[in-house]
Length: 342
Image: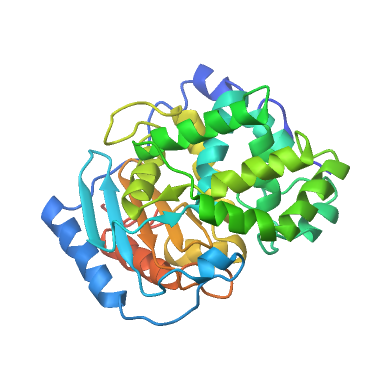
């Protein structure tokens, strides 16, 4: 069964030919000092929260200091506002997914991404086999493990090492600096990622994994084990919110078109089964990871990142969600909030 949005011309060039899409919805943040005050206030407000627990999916994640908490807001003009444990390194985990998707979208185009990966929410956990097996097409979306594995296989390159070099360099351009691989977490993840192995072979069996299963799984696992800080993530989120231009380096990483479709899939499934709750409260594209990070983008304004390892039952950082909700409200970031005369 197809929808009206599966018409081949929907992602074609007809909007440009009609002069549609020449204007974008942007806006402005409050004065710099006020943004900094609110970031500091958000950190102070939630730093003592003890709800949630570290992920035990990989042993290395369980050993992280559960009380670490950092916030960084990066404006589209390059200004940074930081509070808390902003220098603490952690593995990016699933927060890598939107940036890898953006690189794939840039390489093969949004229409091919939609056809080969899917873009709809699954309503199931991020590592669900059932989402692939019972969905009818084998398609999920690039923000859950199955769709993200499929996306990794579509990266340009004739070999896995070429794809890895492209992926690592691309995420480094988003962050504005080279990103290192955490070999300890990679070893931990490789030794215990039994469910992802099952997902890779299941995708292969239904023709939705674009490469040899063990190689694609290795590539996907490596992308999750890149080491970042909240500053890195905030700059990465701001790059998506800034039409693909890194606000610090001022280099173009991907096209504005790739950013638009990346923000769309983040909005659909960035916080897995609780994406609806997030949109209802925060109203912004975002992506969480079991390492404790959350990245949020504000189109035309910048990006926000938080790091706090204590997770809720769905695998999302508790403090990160609280801080994002507070800052979205205080800074008037919610994309769905409009008021007469404003």
